Length: 285
Image 1 (cartoon, rainbow, N blue to C red):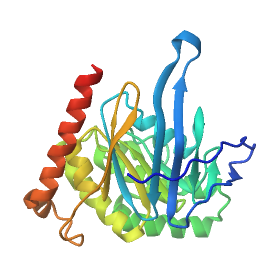
Image 2: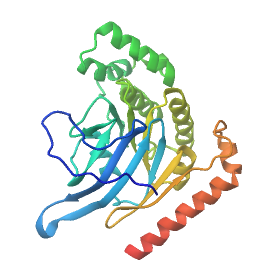
Image 3: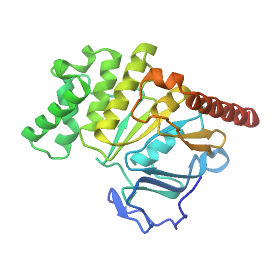
């Protein structure tokens, strides 16, 4: 793996971003440089992960896979700006992250929609908070409703929707701010197998049309390989990157499930990742 050169950590400012002195390339959507994170203090302190270095190119789809406790979700929380790393720095689009921003969208395991609002109102919420006028908000919502296919239920309250439709609405809401980066924390794990596969295919279609950089956290190696252009595998106790590989697709235009299942390279990669995760799990157990 090629990591960026570490740079010194600077003090955070009170604004959502501060200028970075890192020599960031225009190709990078995200850079995590020597990032470590700890919870607690003193003897009760726990290391979530240590010295993680990760770069994400613009338009890249990275799947992060690993067991519970390896720090996958914590890493997303640091990138979105909910928390600050104990050491190291995270840079999005050339600027250091020191708080949440509209350029980063987050989709959670639970949809986290406002149940008293309609689907359209949920989608328009982010742009409204950003001060965008009503006509422009409606235009944004119309485009996204058409993109994801929920125009027919735009006026429905979100509690009236199925689980799969609620999660689609959550993705729509995250896209409404037109983020440079979409962070997804096991968004399909609570869905039935059929709905999960359908939303996986819809996500691939959305990604190819929007060219948004995506970090997708999952426990499923199969899901990671099917979706991602690159796989980052992590071990637990403490969290650490053990594998960072490109997904070798024979035909990047053909993202069908049938093609994936018949691709021997992809099935071999899936087995390689599974073995690596099992081996490290035994060592740390």
